[in-house]
Length: 369
Image (cartoon, rainbow, N blue to C red; front, top):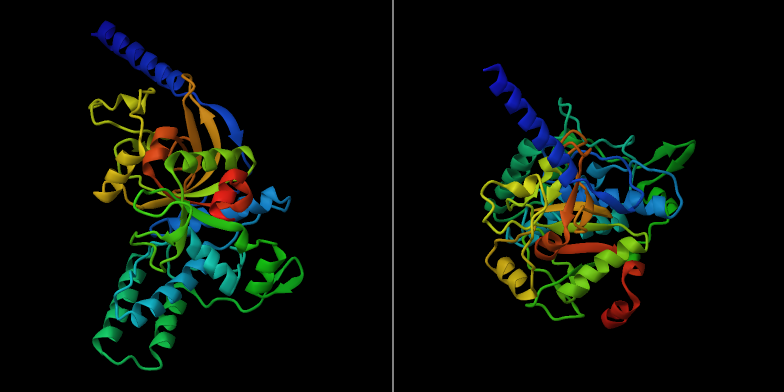
């Protein structure tokens, strides 16, 4: 019996050692980032990823590391969504989800504030939790619509709900002895929103033009540039090589995505033992046609946004994109980061937000940027 146990222990140790050896990544590019945060029990990955991106942009520009308030932007987007929802008689999407441009649009309209100034949480909880809040907001808007003739006070009442749950937004605040408004604070950071564009890659959209990406969370119908898949991937790689991070919008619902195991690969469905969780496998090469098919049949949707901050490679030379998630530092053994393979990116990337200067010149010319 003791011999059997000893053999089993040795086998497990060998397996663990092999796992660590097989998925040992070597850094290629590792760009500056702020600390990993957690969106907690909210559907606000779009804001956490984009604020993280802005914080990295500030580092790239030689500024200090900032901790900006995600919930300040979330609060303003809740307001914008409600106005559109009522004006469209309930036809526009109202949910917790959103897109990277939602952050940029609100920065233009309402500025930015530090996390220390606005936490966006007034209820008794150690974490953010918008389950009750989102139900209350949806129910309120439903009531306004059922009344058929909205009064001139419904929006004030709606904002009162947000004040109770999230707190009133600051009109002025002090940072290092200087008074700011949210708008003047954003201006002091020198973030020019016009420098950033969103790019996608689908065959059902005109190439090298801007058009609305038809996904539910693009509730504002903002427009994206569309390029071929190989060009899409070229922009991602070029961006990182030029020192620019970018915001990633994509699908994380497939078995090949395993934040817990720090990796994301294309699972062809034949790996029932899920060996890809412990060692690299040969992945399916993703073509434009296959990518389009998977998007059209809803196998690929935009269900999560994250922040791409570098490149790594495994022992076989396969390149992965180093990804900063917003599920907290304790969410996996890699401090909240994971590595997504190139083929995973080809299939699961719905769109990116990137600096104009992070786009190769020939593509900038094609896009007219």
